[in-house]
Length: 225
View 1 (spheres, rainbow, N blue to C red):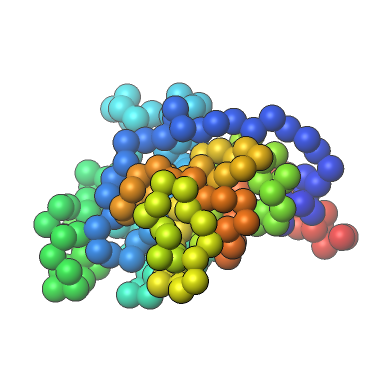
View 2 (cartoon, one colour; view 1 turned 120 degrees about the horizontal axis):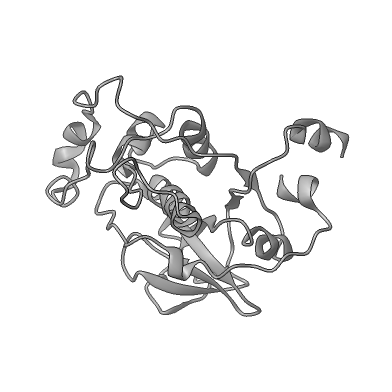
């Protein structure tokens, strides 16, 4: 938990919008957790000038991460996807792409999407780093000094508004990339629908992940509190 390890510090949040990679549309597969997690990783790589072995910006495979992390038709959890990315990684997008055909034809392509046998065991894997839960808005702002945030949130009938407010009926749950927070809004990039939205700060969240590197003794620090 971010507060247990870094509580008490005040840092200047970064507006990560200039570092966001070009949006990749999710389509129908419920891979929002993998899309938003890799959006955070790719933005961090762009800011730090990290490129792939060909010198190109890193573009990682959402499909491979979604499949290997056990995503099903109900989706996946923020923790499970980040743990899979941290432990076993993902390949580049061009090795295991989610093509326009695959993501536009509905459930008929589900088995085809999950067939990743063409990815060889020696294919290079890119590993994600540490991840921690963030509880409070002040600490979410502090954590933005190190990475974009990943938010889990309910989707109401208001979701496609430019300014998204809590609604009356929950239609689903969704994961998105938060690139900045000010005194009024969470600013997000979405892999479906309107790309950029603003969520009011009273919008309910189911979970928030930060991707700051943790100290080696983070477990003992957290146990002591």
